[in-house]
Length: 103
Image (cartoon, rainbow, N blue to C red):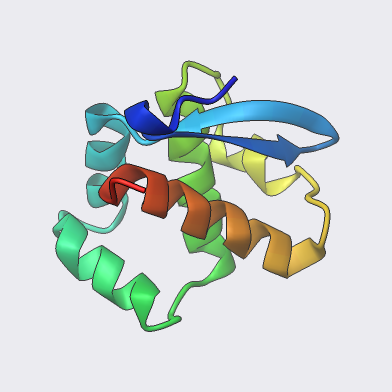
């Protein structure tokens, strides 16, 4: 069961329920993937609705790995989500909200 107080969410990927969490290491992984760009700049870009499929793969993959699940980005790219593209975006938005807000 996901613990929102720890920034965890629950998401169904590939027909299975998974816990995702952007730990400090997962956040550093995202920064590295964006050439060292800081998290605020990355978040501002996402807030403006500028998110690509590769962004969703990176964030979801980092969230899975942050929760201790050994998925590669290549494996994440093959996982299906209910609702198609909007479903992936909901997972990313929910994960970022759980990480950066106190809701």
